Length: 89
Image (tube, rainbow, N blue to C red; front, top):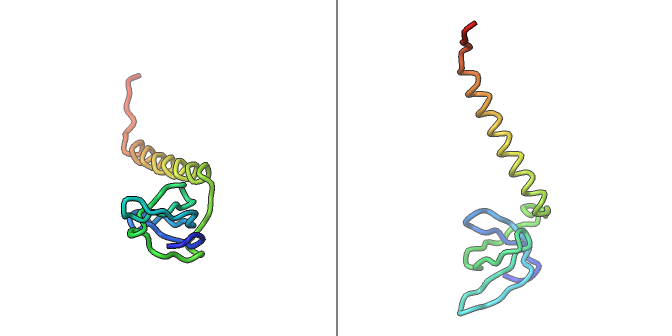
């Protein structure tokens, strides 16, 4: 792994650009720009630039929250549709 290359974290599929590479206690680590986290290079695979989409943390978070809200809305609509109206007058 070298600085400037694109890499994909095998565990989550996160793709990022390598900003820095370091060795510590015999383990090589690479800093990816996607989340500014260090990843063990043995768990990184080469990735293409096409797989890399640089977005801000705020934008990624907003998309995740909106996606969760959309799922919640669908669940609520599904639950409401199974309720039969009843009441006393």
